[in-house]
Length: 609
Image (cartoon, rainbow, N blue to C red; front, side):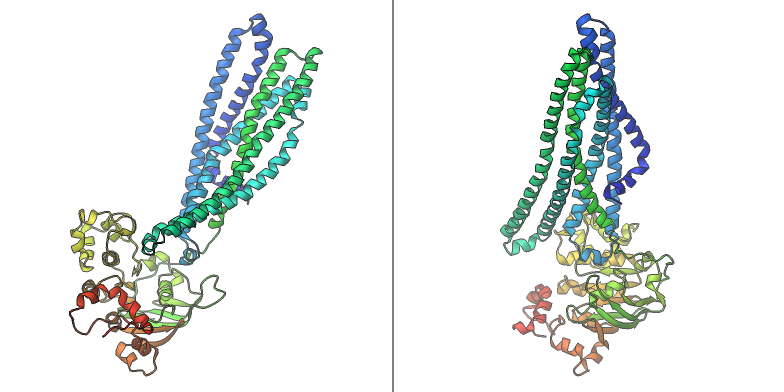
Protein backbone atom coordinates (compact mmCIF):
# COMPACT_ATOMS: atom_id res chain seq x y z
CA UNK A 1 0.00 0.00 0.00
CA UNK A 2 1.03 3.60 -0.49
CA UNK A 3 2.17 5.52 2.61
CA UNK A 4 -1.01 7.62 2.55
CA UNK A 5 -3.24 4.54 2.52
CA UNK A 6 -1.24 2.99 5.35
CA UNK A 7 -1.66 6.16 7.38
CA UNK A 8 -5.39 5.97 6.76
CA UNK A 9 -5.46 2.66 8.66
CA UNK A 10 -4.18 4.52 11.72
CA UNK A 11 -7.01 7.06 11.35
CA UNK A 12 -9.76 4.50 10.76
CA UNK A 13 -10.48 3.87 14.49
CA UNK A 14 -11.39 7.57 14.76
CA UNK A 15 -13.75 7.58 11.77
CA UNK A 16 -16.67 8.94 13.84
CA UNK A 17 -14.63 12.04 14.69
CA UNK A 18 -13.55 12.31 11.06
CA UNK A 19 -17.15 12.09 9.89
CA UNK A 20 -18.22 14.79 12.36
CA UNK A 21 -15.31 16.96 11.17
CA UNK A 22 -16.37 16.37 7.55
CA UNK A 23 -19.94 17.47 8.34
CA UNK A 24 -18.60 20.61 10.00
CA UNK A 25 -16.46 21.30 6.93
CA UNK A 26 -19.53 20.90 4.73
CA UNK A 27 -21.31 23.51 6.84
CA UNK A 28 -18.23 25.74 6.49
CA UNK A 29 -18.34 25.44 2.69
CA UNK A 30 -22.10 26.11 2.55
CA UNK A 31 -21.80 29.16 4.84
CA UNK A 32 -18.93 30.52 2.72
CA UNK A 33 -20.98 30.12 -0.47
CA UNK A 34 -23.97 31.70 1.30
CA UNK A 35 -21.97 34.84 2.09
CA UNK A 36 -21.00 35.14 -1.56
CA UNK A 37 -24.61 34.70 -2.65
CA UNK A 38 -25.77 37.51 -0.33
CA UNK A 39 -23.96 39.96 -2.63
CA UNK A 40 -26.81 39.54 -5.14
CA UNK A 41 -29.68 40.83 -2.92
CA UNK A 42 -27.41 43.57 -1.59
CA UNK A 43 -26.85 44.97 -5.10
CA UNK A 44 -30.30 44.20 -6.47
CA UNK A 45 -32.58 44.96 -3.50
CA UNK A 46 -30.89 46.46 -0.44
CA UNK A 47 -28.80 49.25 -2.00
CA UNK A 48 -31.22 50.53 -4.68
CA UNK A 49 -34.55 49.96 -2.86
CA UNK A 50 -33.62 49.27 0.79
CA UNK A 51 -35.65 46.05 0.59
CA UNK A 52 -34.92 42.84 2.56
CA UNK A 53 -32.37 44.70 4.70
CA UNK A 54 -33.25 42.85 7.90
CA UNK A 55 -33.27 39.47 6.16
CA UNK A 56 -29.89 40.06 4.50
CA UNK A 57 -28.28 41.35 7.69
CA UNK A 58 -29.64 38.47 9.79
CA UNK A 59 -28.65 35.89 7.21
CA UNK A 60 -25.16 37.38 6.95
CA UNK A 61 -24.67 37.22 10.73
CA UNK A 62 -25.96 33.65 10.75
CA UNK A 63 -23.57 32.65 7.96
CA UNK A 64 -20.61 34.15 9.79
CA UNK A 65 -21.64 32.36 13.01
CA UNK A 66 -21.99 29.05 11.18
CA UNK A 67 -18.71 29.55 9.37
CA UNK A 68 -16.81 30.37 12.55
CA UNK A 69 -18.37 27.58 14.63
CA UNK A 70 -17.90 24.95 11.92
CA UNK A 71 -14.28 26.06 11.38
CA UNK A 72 -13.58 25.68 15.11
CA UNK A 73 -15.29 22.29 15.38
CA UNK A 74 -13.63 20.86 12.27
CA UNK A 75 -10.19 22.16 13.28
CA UNK A 76 -10.53 20.81 16.82
CA UNK A 77 -11.73 17.40 15.67
CA UNK A 78 -9.12 17.06 12.92
CA UNK A 79 -6.33 18.15 15.27
CA UNK A 80 -7.51 15.58 17.81
CA UNK A 81 -7.50 12.82 15.21
CA UNK A 82 -4.11 13.94 13.93
CA UNK A 83 -2.58 13.97 17.40
CA UNK A 84 -3.96 10.52 18.14
CA UNK A 85 -2.69 9.09 14.86
CA UNK A 86 0.76 10.57 15.40
CA UNK A 87 0.85 9.34 19.00
CA UNK A 88 0.06 5.81 17.84
CA UNK A 89 2.60 5.94 14.99
CA UNK A 90 5.33 7.26 17.30
CA UNK A 91 4.55 4.67 19.98
CA UNK A 92 4.54 1.83 17.47
CA UNK A 93 7.76 3.08 15.87
CA UNK A 94 9.57 3.32 19.22
CA UNK A 95 8.26 -0.06 20.35
CA UNK A 96 9.27 -1.62 17.04
CA UNK A 97 12.80 -0.23 17.23
CA UNK A 98 13.32 -1.17 20.89
CA UNK A 99 12.27 -4.75 20.20
CA UNK A 100 14.70 -5.23 17.32
CA UNK A 101 17.70 -7.51 17.67
CA UNK A 102 21.19 -6.32 18.51
CA UNK A 103 22.05 -6.69 14.83
CA UNK A 104 19.53 -4.01 13.93
CA UNK A 105 21.26 -1.45 16.15
CA UNK A 106 24.74 -2.46 15.08
CA UNK A 107 23.88 -1.61 11.46
CA UNK A 108 22.07 1.68 12.13
CA UNK A 109 23.13 4.96 13.68
CA UNK A 110 21.35 6.22 16.79
CA UNK A 111 20.99 9.79 15.51
CA UNK A 112 19.29 8.56 12.34
CA UNK A 113 16.81 6.45 14.32
CA UNK A 114 16.02 9.39 16.61
CA UNK A 115 15.41 11.53 13.52
CA UNK A 116 12.76 9.08 12.32
CA UNK A 117 10.94 9.28 15.66
CA UNK A 118 11.15 13.07 15.93
CA UNK A 119 11.54 14.86 12.61
CA UNK A 120 9.67 12.43 10.36
CA UNK A 121 6.83 11.90 12.81
CA UNK A 122 6.51 15.68 13.25
CA UNK A 123 6.06 16.03 9.48
CA UNK A 124 3.22 13.51 9.63
CA UNK A 125 1.71 15.31 12.61
CA UNK A 126 1.62 18.56 10.64
CA UNK A 127 0.05 16.79 7.67
CA UNK A 128 -2.61 14.86 9.54
CA UNK A 129 -3.51 17.62 12.00
CA UNK A 130 -3.39 20.64 9.69
CA UNK A 131 -2.79 19.78 6.05
CA UNK A 132 -5.51 17.16 5.67
CA UNK A 133 -7.94 19.43 7.52
CA UNK A 134 -7.13 22.31 5.20
CA UNK A 135 -7.43 20.01 2.19
CA UNK A 136 -10.93 18.86 3.11
CA UNK A 137 -12.18 22.20 4.38
CA UNK A 138 -10.92 24.26 1.45
CA UNK A 139 -12.01 21.62 -1.05
CA UNK A 140 -15.56 21.71 0.31
CA UNK A 141 -15.45 25.52 0.24
CA UNK A 142 -14.46 25.32 -3.44
CA UNK A 143 -17.36 22.95 -4.07
CA UNK A 144 -19.71 25.48 -2.50
CA UNK A 145 -18.31 28.37 -4.51
CA UNK A 146 -18.35 26.31 -7.70
CA UNK A 147 -21.98 25.29 -7.17
CA UNK A 148 -22.88 28.95 -6.67
CA UNK A 149 -21.11 29.94 -9.90
CA UNK A 150 -23.05 27.37 -11.92
CA UNK A 151 -26.29 28.34 -10.16
CA UNK A 152 -25.87 31.97 -11.15
CA UNK A 153 -24.71 31.37 -14.73
CA UNK A 154 -23.44 28.04 -15.96
CA UNK A 155 -22.04 29.52 -19.16
CA UNK A 156 -20.06 32.15 -17.31
CA UNK A 157 -18.86 29.50 -14.87
CA UNK A 158 -17.57 27.35 -17.74
CA UNK A 159 -15.70 30.32 -19.17
CA UNK A 160 -14.00 30.96 -15.85
CA UNK A 161 -13.14 27.33 -15.14
CA UNK A 162 -11.71 26.50 -18.55
CA UNK A 163 -8.23 27.20 -17.16
CA UNK A 164 -8.62 24.62 -14.37
CA UNK A 165 -7.22 21.69 -16.38
CA UNK A 166 -4.15 23.81 -17.18
CA UNK A 167 -3.40 23.94 -13.46
CA UNK A 168 -3.26 20.16 -13.03
CA UNK A 169 -0.10 19.51 -15.05
CA UNK A 170 2.17 22.02 -13.25
CA UNK A 171 0.72 20.89 -9.92
CA UNK A 172 1.63 17.28 -10.67
CA UNK A 173 5.11 18.16 -11.93
CA UNK A 174 5.89 20.46 -9.03
CA UNK A 175 4.49 17.88 -6.61
CA UNK A 176 6.90 15.27 -7.95
CA UNK A 177 9.81 17.67 -7.57
CA UNK A 178 8.76 18.53 -4.02
CA UNK A 179 8.63 14.81 -3.21
CA UNK A 180 12.15 14.17 -4.52
CA UNK A 181 13.74 17.17 -2.85
CA UNK A 182 11.84 16.54 0.39
CA UNK A 183 13.33 13.06 0.67
CA UNK A 184 16.81 14.51 0.25
CA UNK A 185 15.96 17.14 2.85
CA UNK A 186 14.84 14.49 5.34
CA UNK A 187 18.01 12.49 4.73
CA UNK A 188 20.13 15.61 5.29
CA UNK A 189 18.23 16.32 8.50
CA UNK A 190 18.82 12.72 9.58
CA UNK A 191 22.55 13.15 8.93
CA UNK A 192 22.53 16.37 10.97
CA UNK A 193 20.93 14.50 13.89
CA UNK A 194 23.61 11.83 13.61
CA UNK A 195 26.48 14.33 13.68
CA UNK A 196 24.98 16.13 16.69
CA UNK A 197 24.36 12.93 18.66
CA UNK A 198 27.83 11.63 17.89
CA UNK A 199 29.56 14.86 18.90
CA UNK A 200 27.56 15.30 22.11
CA UNK A 201 27.88 11.69 23.29
CA UNK A 202 31.61 11.68 22.51
CA UNK A 203 32.31 15.14 23.89
CA UNK A 204 35.22 13.96 26.04
CA UNK A 205 37.05 12.50 23.05
CA UNK A 206 36.29 15.65 21.04
CA UNK A 207 37.85 17.79 23.74
CA UNK A 208 40.72 15.42 24.43
CA UNK A 209 41.87 15.69 20.81
CA UNK A 210 40.97 19.40 20.50
CA UNK A 211 38.62 18.48 17.67
CA UNK A 212 35.89 21.02 18.43
CA UNK A 213 36.62 22.98 15.26
CA UNK A 214 36.54 19.77 13.21
CA UNK A 215 33.11 18.83 14.58
CA UNK A 216 31.83 22.37 14.01
CA UNK A 217 32.98 22.18 10.39
CA UNK A 218 31.26 18.81 9.96
CA UNK A 219 28.07 20.28 11.35
CA UNK A 220 28.34 23.40 9.21
CA UNK A 221 28.88 21.32 6.08
CA UNK A 222 25.83 19.18 6.80
CA UNK A 223 23.80 22.26 7.76
CA UNK A 224 24.76 23.96 4.49
CA UNK A 225 23.70 20.90 2.51
CA UNK A 226 20.37 20.86 4.37
CA UNK A 227 19.93 24.59 3.69
CA UNK A 228 20.46 24.14 -0.06
CA UNK A 229 18.08 21.20 -0.23
CA UNK A 230 15.41 23.08 1.74
CA UNK A 231 15.76 26.05 -0.59
CA UNK A 232 15.03 23.74 -3.52
CA UNK A 233 11.93 22.52 -1.71
CA UNK A 234 10.78 26.05 -0.94
CA UNK A 235 11.53 27.11 -4.51
CA UNK A 236 9.12 24.48 -5.78
CA UNK A 237 6.48 25.37 -3.18
CA UNK A 238 6.84 29.13 -3.78
CA UNK A 239 6.21 28.67 -7.51
CA UNK A 240 2.69 27.39 -6.97
CA UNK A 241 0.87 30.50 -5.57
CA UNK A 242 2.02 32.90 -8.35
CA UNK A 243 0.98 30.35 -10.94
CA UNK A 244 -2.43 30.01 -9.33
CA UNK A 245 -2.76 33.80 -9.06
CA UNK A 246 -1.97 34.27 -12.74
CA UNK A 247 -4.51 31.68 -13.81
CA UNK A 248 -7.05 33.27 -11.45
CA UNK A 249 -6.43 36.65 -13.10
CA UNK A 250 -7.16 35.12 -16.49
CA UNK A 251 -10.42 33.74 -15.13
CA UNK A 252 -11.47 37.15 -13.74
CA UNK A 253 -10.61 38.84 -17.04
CA UNK A 254 -12.68 36.29 -18.91
CA UNK A 255 -15.56 36.75 -16.48
CA UNK A 256 -15.53 40.54 -16.96
CA UNK A 257 -15.57 40.19 -20.75
CA UNK A 258 -18.35 37.62 -20.78
CA UNK A 259 -20.34 39.11 -17.90
CA UNK A 260 -20.46 42.61 -19.37
CA UNK A 261 -22.05 41.19 -22.53
CA UNK A 262 -24.62 39.25 -20.48
CA UNK A 263 -25.58 42.34 -18.47
CA UNK A 264 -26.05 44.43 -21.64
CA UNK A 265 -28.21 41.65 -23.05
CA UNK A 266 -30.27 41.71 -19.80
CA UNK A 267 -29.58 38.04 -19.23
CA UNK A 268 -27.69 38.83 -16.00
CA UNK A 269 -28.39 41.42 -13.30
CA UNK A 270 -25.71 43.58 -11.72
CA UNK A 271 -26.28 41.83 -8.38
CA UNK A 272 -25.88 38.40 -9.91
CA UNK A 273 -22.69 39.46 -11.64
CA UNK A 274 -21.33 41.04 -8.45
CA UNK A 275 -22.17 37.87 -6.52
CA UNK A 276 -20.49 35.81 -9.24
CA UNK A 277 -17.31 37.91 -9.14
CA UNK A 278 -17.29 37.83 -5.32
CA UNK A 279 -17.52 34.02 -5.33
CA UNK A 280 -14.78 33.90 -7.95
CA UNK A 281 -12.49 36.05 -5.83
CA UNK A 282 -13.36 34.03 -2.72
CA UNK A 283 -12.24 30.90 -4.55
CA UNK A 284 -8.74 32.27 -4.85
CA UNK A 285 -7.99 31.90 -1.13
CA UNK A 286 -8.82 28.16 -0.96
CA UNK A 287 -7.09 27.49 -4.30
CA UNK A 288 -3.93 29.24 -3.12
CA UNK A 289 -4.00 27.32 0.16
CA UNK A 290 -4.57 24.04 -1.65
CA UNK A 291 -1.43 24.63 -3.71
CA UNK A 292 0.56 24.68 -0.48
CA UNK A 293 -1.44 21.76 0.91
CA UNK A 294 -0.31 19.67 -2.06
CA UNK A 295 3.32 20.35 -1.19
CA UNK A 296 2.65 19.54 2.46
CA UNK A 297 1.08 16.21 1.53
CA UNK A 298 4.11 15.34 -0.59
CA UNK A 299 6.42 16.10 2.34
CA UNK A 300 4.27 14.03 4.70
CA UNK A 301 4.17 11.18 2.21
CA UNK A 302 7.98 11.07 2.12
CA UNK A 303 8.17 11.08 5.94
CA UNK A 304 5.56 8.33 6.15
CA UNK A 305 7.49 6.26 3.64
CA UNK A 306 10.69 6.62 5.69
CA UNK A 307 8.83 5.60 8.86
CA UNK A 308 7.26 2.57 7.21
CA UNK A 309 10.69 1.55 5.89
CA UNK A 310 11.71 1.07 9.54
CA UNK A 311 8.42 -0.57 10.53
CA UNK A 312 8.83 -3.04 7.67
CA UNK A 313 12.23 -4.18 8.97
CA UNK A 314 11.87 -7.28 11.14
CA UNK A 315 15.13 -8.46 12.66
CA UNK A 316 13.77 -8.84 16.17
CA UNK A 317 14.27 -12.05 18.09
CA UNK A 318 10.74 -13.23 18.88
CA UNK A 319 9.04 -16.13 20.56
CA UNK A 320 8.10 -19.03 18.37
CA UNK A 321 4.33 -19.71 18.14
CA UNK A 322 4.81 -22.89 20.19
CA UNK A 323 7.22 -21.35 22.72
CA UNK A 324 6.67 -22.26 26.36
CA UNK A 325 8.22 -20.92 29.57
CA UNK A 326 11.59 -22.42 30.43
CA UNK A 327 12.13 -23.90 33.86
CA UNK A 328 14.96 -22.72 36.08
CA UNK A 329 18.31 -24.24 35.19
CA UNK A 330 18.76 -27.65 36.85
CA UNK A 331 20.98 -29.88 34.68
CA UNK A 332 23.17 -28.09 32.15
CA UNK A 333 23.59 -25.46 29.45
CA UNK A 334 24.83 -27.08 26.27
CA UNK A 335 26.20 -25.65 23.06
CA UNK A 336 25.65 -28.13 20.24
CA UNK A 337 27.70 -27.40 17.12
CA UNK A 338 26.81 -23.68 17.39
CA UNK A 339 27.66 -21.38 14.50
CA UNK A 340 26.83 -17.75 13.93
CA UNK A 341 27.11 -15.22 11.12
CA UNK A 342 26.05 -11.59 11.26
CA UNK A 343 23.42 -10.46 8.78
CA UNK A 344 25.02 -8.94 5.71
CA UNK A 345 28.40 -10.56 6.38
CA UNK A 346 28.20 -12.64 3.17
CA UNK A 347 28.14 -15.85 5.16
CA UNK A 348 31.39 -15.19 7.01
CA UNK A 349 31.15 -17.08 10.30
CA UNK A 350 31.99 -15.39 13.58
CA UNK A 351 31.55 -18.64 15.50
CA UNK A 352 31.99 -22.17 14.17
CA UNK A 353 31.28 -25.61 15.62
CA UNK A 354 31.04 -24.48 19.25
CA UNK A 355 30.32 -27.54 21.35
CA UNK A 356 30.41 -27.19 25.14
CA UNK A 357 28.48 -28.39 28.18
CA UNK A 358 28.33 -26.28 31.34
CA UNK A 359 27.09 -27.74 34.61
CA UNK A 360 25.02 -25.74 37.11
CA UNK A 361 27.20 -23.74 39.48
CA UNK A 362 30.24 -23.78 37.21
CA UNK A 363 32.18 -20.64 36.39
CA UNK A 364 33.28 -20.59 32.75
CA UNK A 365 35.84 -18.05 31.56
CA UNK A 366 36.13 -17.22 27.87
CA UNK A 367 39.55 -15.98 26.80
CA UNK A 368 41.13 -15.15 23.48
CA UNK A 369 42.38 -12.31 21.38
CA UNK A 370 40.11 -9.46 20.34
CA UNK A 371 37.72 -10.64 17.62
CA UNK A 372 37.82 -14.28 18.64
CA UNK A 373 34.06 -14.32 19.33
CA UNK A 374 33.87 -14.15 23.14
CA UNK A 375 31.22 -11.43 23.42
CA UNK A 376 29.22 -12.83 20.52
CA UNK A 377 29.07 -16.20 22.26
CA UNK A 378 27.66 -14.82 25.51
CA UNK A 379 25.21 -12.68 23.53
CA UNK A 380 23.80 -15.86 22.04
CA UNK A 381 23.07 -17.22 25.51
CA UNK A 382 20.69 -14.32 26.19
CA UNK A 383 19.32 -14.51 22.62
CA UNK A 384 20.38 -11.03 21.67
CA UNK A 385 20.95 -12.90 18.43
CA UNK A 386 19.73 -16.31 17.36
CA UNK A 387 22.25 -18.92 16.32
CA UNK A 388 22.51 -19.54 12.58
CA UNK A 389 23.71 -23.11 13.09
CA UNK A 390 23.28 -25.69 15.81
CA UNK A 391 21.47 -24.97 19.07
CA UNK A 392 21.91 -23.83 22.66
CA UNK A 393 20.07 -26.07 25.10
CA UNK A 394 18.94 -25.30 28.62
CA UNK A 395 18.24 -28.57 30.42
CA UNK A 396 17.95 -30.23 27.02
CA UNK A 397 15.45 -27.66 25.64
CA UNK A 398 16.42 -25.43 22.73
CA UNK A 399 16.27 -21.89 24.13
CA UNK A 400 14.49 -20.85 20.90
CA UNK A 401 11.61 -23.10 21.97
CA UNK A 402 11.24 -21.17 25.22
CA UNK A 403 9.85 -17.71 25.78
CA UNK A 404 12.27 -14.81 25.86
CA UNK A 405 10.85 -13.60 29.16
CA UNK A 406 11.48 -16.91 30.91
CA UNK A 407 15.01 -17.14 29.46
CA UNK A 408 16.16 -13.62 30.21
CA UNK A 409 14.48 -13.75 33.60
CA UNK A 410 17.16 -16.30 34.57
CA UNK A 411 20.06 -14.16 33.37
CA UNK A 412 21.82 -11.20 34.98
CA UNK A 413 24.41 -9.33 32.97
CA UNK A 414 27.17 -6.82 33.69
CA UNK A 415 28.97 -5.44 30.65
CA UNK A 416 32.17 -3.50 30.16
CA UNK A 417 30.23 -0.50 28.84
CA UNK A 418 28.23 0.50 31.87
CA UNK A 419 24.80 1.88 30.94
CA UNK A 420 22.91 3.91 33.53
CA UNK A 421 19.67 5.70 32.75
CA UNK A 422 18.55 9.19 33.67
CA UNK A 423 16.90 8.72 37.05
CA UNK A 424 17.79 8.09 40.68
CA UNK A 425 20.44 5.65 41.85
CA UNK A 426 17.73 3.49 43.42
CA UNK A 427 15.79 3.38 40.14
CA UNK A 428 18.91 2.32 38.25
CA UNK A 429 19.72 -0.49 40.68
CA UNK A 430 16.11 -1.72 40.57
CA UNK A 431 15.87 -1.30 36.78
CA UNK A 432 15.24 -5.00 36.14
CA UNK A 433 13.28 -5.53 39.36
CA UNK A 434 11.11 -2.46 39.79
CA UNK A 435 9.15 -3.81 42.76
CA UNK A 436 12.29 -4.25 44.84
CA UNK A 437 12.18 -2.90 48.36
CA UNK A 438 14.60 -0.29 49.63
CA UNK A 439 16.18 -2.88 51.91
CA UNK A 440 16.83 -5.21 48.97
CA UNK A 441 18.36 -2.35 46.97
CA UNK A 442 20.66 -1.42 49.82
CA UNK A 443 21.68 -5.04 50.42
CA UNK A 444 22.65 -5.45 46.75
CA UNK A 445 24.61 -2.22 46.98
CA UNK A 446 26.48 -3.42 50.06
CA UNK A 447 27.50 -6.67 48.34
CA UNK A 448 28.70 -4.66 45.35
CA UNK A 449 30.48 -2.25 47.71
CA UNK A 450 28.50 0.68 46.37
CA UNK A 451 26.59 1.52 49.56
CA UNK A 452 29.49 3.49 51.03
CA UNK A 453 29.88 6.01 48.21
CA UNK A 454 26.11 6.26 47.72
CA UNK A 455 25.77 7.32 51.36
CA UNK A 456 28.25 10.12 50.76
CA UNK A 457 26.12 11.64 47.97
CA UNK A 458 23.86 14.60 48.75
CA UNK A 459 20.57 12.70 48.36
CA UNK A 460 21.83 9.17 48.83
CA UNK A 461 19.83 6.63 46.84
CA UNK A 462 17.55 9.40 45.54
CA UNK A 463 20.44 11.20 43.83
CA UNK A 464 19.75 11.85 40.17
CA UNK A 465 22.57 10.33 38.11
CA UNK A 466 21.79 12.34 34.96
CA UNK A 467 22.38 11.25 31.38
CA UNK A 468 25.20 8.72 31.27
CA UNK A 469 25.93 9.28 35.00
CA UNK A 470 28.85 11.50 34.03
CA UNK A 471 29.25 12.82 37.58
CA UNK A 472 30.12 9.34 38.86
CA UNK A 473 33.49 7.71 38.37
CA UNK A 474 33.87 4.71 36.11
CA UNK A 475 34.32 2.43 39.10
CA UNK A 476 31.22 3.81 40.81
CA UNK A 477 29.13 3.33 37.68
CA UNK A 478 30.36 -0.24 37.33
CA UNK A 479 29.55 -1.08 40.94
CA UNK A 480 26.01 0.23 40.43
CA UNK A 481 25.71 -2.03 37.40
CA UNK A 482 26.92 -4.98 39.50
CA UNK A 483 24.38 -4.11 42.22
CA UNK A 484 21.68 -4.06 39.53
CA UNK A 485 22.68 -7.57 38.44
CA UNK A 486 22.86 -8.79 42.04
CA UNK A 487 19.34 -7.58 42.80
CA UNK A 488 17.79 -9.84 40.16
CA UNK A 489 19.15 -12.91 41.99
CA UNK A 490 19.34 -14.74 38.66
CA UNK A 491 20.75 -18.30 38.47
CA UNK A 492 22.85 -17.44 35.39
CA UNK A 493 25.39 -14.62 35.36
CA UNK A 494 27.12 -13.11 32.34
CA UNK A 495 30.07 -10.89 33.24
CA UNK A 496 31.65 -9.16 30.25
CA UNK A 497 34.74 -7.37 31.62
CA UNK A 498 32.64 -6.66 34.70
CA UNK A 499 35.57 -5.34 36.77
CA UNK A 500 37.44 -3.51 34.02
CA UNK A 501 36.62 -0.02 35.33
CA UNK A 502 37.51 -0.75 38.95
CA UNK A 503 40.76 0.18 40.59
CA UNK A 504 42.69 -2.55 42.41
CA UNK A 505 41.18 -1.82 45.81
CA UNK A 506 37.61 -1.73 44.54
CA UNK A 507 38.19 -4.83 42.45
CA UNK A 508 39.41 -6.74 45.47
CA UNK A 509 36.25 -5.87 47.36
CA UNK A 510 34.01 -6.76 44.42
CA UNK A 511 35.87 -10.01 43.81
CA UNK A 512 35.07 -10.99 47.40
CA UNK A 513 31.44 -10.19 46.70
CA UNK A 514 31.61 -12.26 43.52
CA UNK A 515 32.91 -15.21 45.54
CA UNK A 516 29.65 -15.19 47.48
CA UNK A 517 27.57 -14.33 44.44
CA UNK A 518 28.96 -17.05 42.17
CA UNK A 519 28.23 -19.75 44.72
CA UNK A 520 25.58 -22.13 43.33
CA UNK A 521 25.22 -20.00 40.22
CA UNK A 522 26.25 -20.69 36.65
CA UNK A 523 28.43 -17.89 35.34
CA UNK A 524 30.01 -16.98 32.04
CA UNK A 525 32.89 -14.56 32.40
CA UNK A 526 34.89 -12.63 29.84
CA UNK A 527 37.90 -11.18 31.59
CA UNK A 528 41.50 -10.19 31.12
CA UNK A 529 42.21 -10.15 34.85
CA UNK A 530 44.38 -13.15 35.64
CA UNK A 531 42.90 -13.39 39.13
CA UNK A 532 39.44 -13.85 37.61
CA UNK A 533 40.55 -16.36 34.99
CA UNK A 534 42.46 -18.53 37.48
CA UNK A 535 39.34 -18.98 39.63
CA UNK A 536 37.30 -20.38 36.75
CA UNK A 537 36.16 -24.00 36.82
CA UNK A 538 36.55 -24.17 33.07
CA UNK A 539 38.60 -21.90 30.81
CA UNK A 540 37.42 -21.89 27.19
CA UNK A 541 40.05 -20.61 24.76
CA UNK A 542 38.62 -19.17 21.54
CA UNK A 543 40.58 -18.50 18.39
CA UNK A 544 38.98 -17.23 15.16
CA UNK A 545 35.53 -18.27 16.34
CA UNK A 546 36.46 -21.82 17.35
CA UNK A 547 37.12 -23.51 20.68
CA UNK A 548 40.74 -24.60 20.59
CA UNK A 549 41.31 -25.49 24.24
CA UNK A 550 39.39 -26.06 27.46
CA UNK A 551 40.60 -26.78 30.98
CA UNK A 552 41.82 -25.26 34.25
CA UNK A 553 44.50 -22.59 34.43
CA UNK A 554 47.37 -24.81 35.63
CA UNK A 555 46.49 -27.60 33.21
CA UNK A 556 46.43 -25.26 30.21
CA UNK A 557 49.78 -23.73 31.16
CA UNK A 558 51.42 -27.15 31.04
CA UNK A 559 50.53 -27.67 27.38
CA UNK A 560 53.60 -26.77 25.38
CA UNK A 561 52.65 -24.88 22.26
CA UNK A 562 49.09 -24.40 23.49
CA UNK A 563 47.17 -21.24 22.63
CA UNK A 564 46.45 -20.41 26.27
CA UNK A 565 50.11 -20.64 27.19
CA UNK A 566 50.98 -18.35 24.28
CA UNK A 567 48.39 -15.84 25.46
CA UNK A 568 49.83 -16.07 28.96
CA UNK A 569 53.36 -15.56 27.69
CA UNK A 570 52.20 -12.59 25.61
CA UNK A 571 50.98 -11.07 28.90
CA UNK A 572 47.48 -10.67 27.51
CA UNK A 573 46.15 -11.06 31.06
CA UNK A 574 46.25 -8.09 33.42
CA UNK A 575 48.30 -9.36 36.36
CA UNK A 576 48.78 -7.64 39.73
CA UNK A 577 52.26 -7.26 41.18
CA UNK A 578 53.62 -10.17 43.19
CA UNK A 579 54.34 -7.89 46.14
CA UNK A 580 53.61 -4.27 47.05
CA UNK A 581 56.13 -1.63 46.09
CA UNK A 582 56.50 2.05 46.69
CA UNK A 583 54.79 2.56 43.36
CA UNK A 584 51.68 0.56 44.33
CA UNK A 585 49.42 3.62 44.17
CA UNK A 586 50.62 4.37 40.66
CA UNK A 587 50.02 0.74 39.68
CA UNK A 588 46.46 0.92 40.99
CA UNK A 589 45.70 4.17 39.20
CA UNK A 590 47.00 2.68 35.98
CA UNK A 591 45.08 -0.60 36.32
CA UNK A 592 42.77 0.41 33.46
CA UNK A 593 45.81 0.93 31.24
CA UNK A 594 47.48 -2.36 32.19
CA UNK A 595 45.70 -4.51 29.68
CA UNK A 596 46.48 -2.13 26.86
CA UNK A 597 50.13 -2.09 27.87
CA UNK A 598 50.28 -5.88 27.96
CA UNK A 599 48.44 -6.28 24.68
CA UNK A 600 50.89 -3.95 22.97
CA UNK A 601 54.04 -5.43 24.53
CA UNK A 602 55.57 -5.54 21.06
CA UNK A 603 55.71 -1.74 21.17
CA UNK A 604 58.23 -1.93 24.00
CA UNK A 605 55.77 -1.42 26.87
CA UNK A 606 56.51 -4.03 29.57
CA UNK A 607 55.20 -4.60 33.09
CA UNK A 608 56.84 -6.59 35.85
CA UNK A 609 54.91 -9.52 37.32
